[in-house]
Amino acid sequence: MDPSVIAQLMDILRVNPYSRFFRSLGDLPSLECQKICIRSDPGLDQRVYNAPTSSEVAAIWVEDDTLDQITPRDIFVYNHVGGSHIVQYYYGCYDPLQYPLLFPFGDIGWHQVFRRKRKDSFVSCREYYCYKLQIRENINSILLVSGRLLQQFVVDMYIKIETSRLDYFRSNQQHIRSELYQGIVDSISVGETNASRIGKRIILPSSFIGGPRDMQKRYMEAMTLVQRYGKPDIFLTITCNPNWKEISAELKPHEETQNRPDLIARVFKAKLEELKDQLFKWEIFGKVSAYVYVIEHQKRGLPHAHFLIILRRDWKLYAPESFDQIVSAELPDKNKNLHLYTAVTKHMMHGPCGILNPANVCMKRNGHCKNSYPRQFVRNTTIGNDCFPIYRRADDKKVVKIRGHDLDNR
Image (cartoon, rainbow, N blue to C red; front, side, top):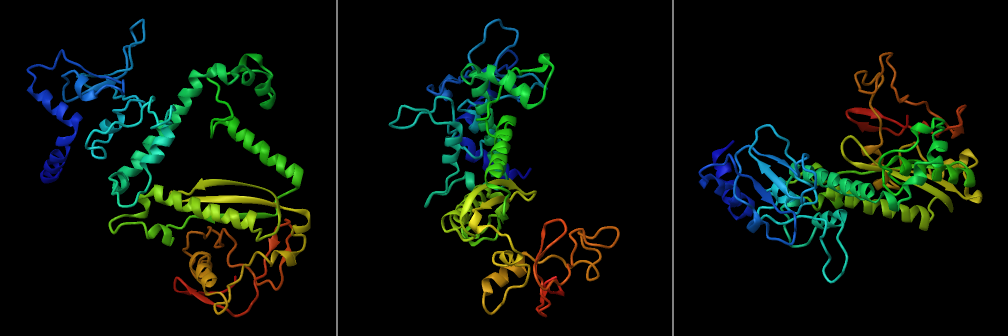
């Protein structure tokens, strides 16, 4: 704890209404019988209606469970040591209390009655934080340059969004026909024969993204496409590269890519939409009957997407010669396509492993690569015994130096 840094933070937070209020508690003679009541009504000035008192250690909860009637949704701060610290997500004071350095002026965050200007409608939790994370010209956002604190804020707000969705379905069970989900539809889908096990207290419909019914619905839709149009012809993956110029150009000198998940997500989404245009509008692989894709995140936090593409009957890949028109497992010609050659040699060369590097992470205990590299030279593309293609890898004497070793098409 550097005293100079603490002094600077205290000076910054002099403009924070919550900070000023809590600092003023030191002037009270006794805090034993005092409590703070932070009004949840966003229409009131919270700096005015805060009742004075609390101690250094505070426990925060919403209401007393011993009361017969539900009390107004206020936040009570008591001076008991070891109590739970709870601030309800739908209070406007949640953000400035949880992240005082991100909101030094005590700006009120999202709340349930947040309305649009000139429109008689409410702003959802997701819409509000999409607005807060926007990149704007000539405006330096404290939030977007907060490094790891931005990551914590994004995760925290995602939990808030999910909680708001769950609360909606919890309080609107009668409007989503929950009795239908609790009945014979669910019991048949899971093969349940015991009637006492049918139904749940809270029903999540298929419209809740990521829920079990949503996942089952997506799976059944994908299987229906295969049943109608046949098995997929192309499996394609697009992976986010943190060194993309669209990402690096937006980073400031002190910023790291890992601390800008918002920027990575935006650029990857733009690249994904461009790829979809090439596949399905420009039809670079032929006319498409159906497709399905899913976006996942790697352990490094970078997104990638997997596509399954079903081509129309006249464009299907029946012969190995058709594979060579869209797939290559060989080094590109450096003189004809330098950009592709550079991309392949930089990102798509495995190893070295095997005899060249027995200590590589891909090596098994028996001394062989778990990915079966290096492969054998193959003059022409063929179909293997497992129905997977064995791509052409000609012995054309082309080599490239990768991590200190000369590698070829194998």
